[in-house]
Image (tube, rainbow, N blue to C red; front, side):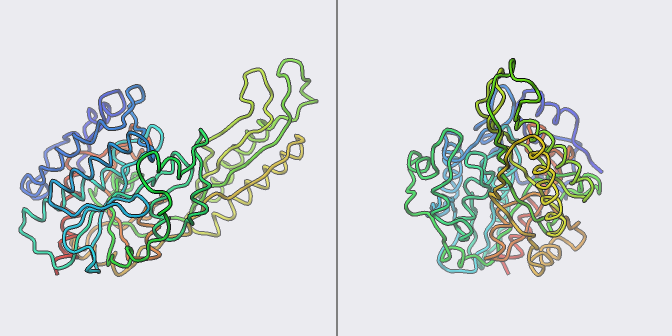
Length: 437
């Protein structure tokens, strides 16, 4: 098994701009005779955009300046290749080779936005690899018999407005215009206000069945957000399913008071209830073989010398099946309410988003495996993706590229150069197999 060098991962964590760096030289067959060279140039150009100098992570949030720079990069890549460029009603970007209206198109791509201080690969690897795979097809002289498109879905991570996969959810009709208009960022800016300031028309957003009807297959390449491929020694894998997952907001209401003069027995401190709930989430997830995380918190009045009046925490929980997920979330809420009653605190729980289990279409998944030689590992994942959202409307599949650290949503996220190139070549093989038959 070829591993990445320690230098590459260390640079990503220590301050140099994170990106693929050479590990041990790969055989010519694994590198496609040295191609695709376009990957490296594109990666180097995109890599600095939205990167925070202090953390080394990325802050590419929806409808911000960094997002605009990423969108400009995407458009430039499309136009430099002579592709037909367009933006749909929900702000998602498209680059077409062939007639966009012909139907039965093969579409690939991912997203360019990030979580707060996220890694370089989650999302952008799929978009860069899509353009590089197209270049590889052209170098091979492949003759397309179906339209081919590359896409960048907007606001996949949900870092700004708290809801993941906004662009694809809107397109698929899983997020209504009315609900989208209610989304606000931490500063109180609404989604339509942010879109309008970025030069887009928020009045147009909504379900886009006509566009989705053009798609015969959607294949998303993504860096693996775990270590299954690293442990098996494989460069590339195929997704089998996405675990059911959701986000729940826990609002703990207590009583603000002076931190120095209020006796402990007189306090109604929601922070205590919140802390016990965090521990309960870890305990219940471990018992069930699931995952549960409180990763975001808001406190009012948020003073060092003040007992909070409100602590708001967001629970992210995921499991291999619906019954297990329900068991975990129910147990966490039960523990939270019992602790709240003991502390004289009230509790409101709101489910802000939920995605049921996604089984990628077996026929398309099997076709990918056949195209790639039949010996590619098939993996489940706990991470959500645009491909999962679209799966209800169009046949979808995913390719994963090895991540030797297993780390994601962090500056330490990494994929070696050889593995990135292997991913591009695998995607090119898949696109050729689907669009040139």
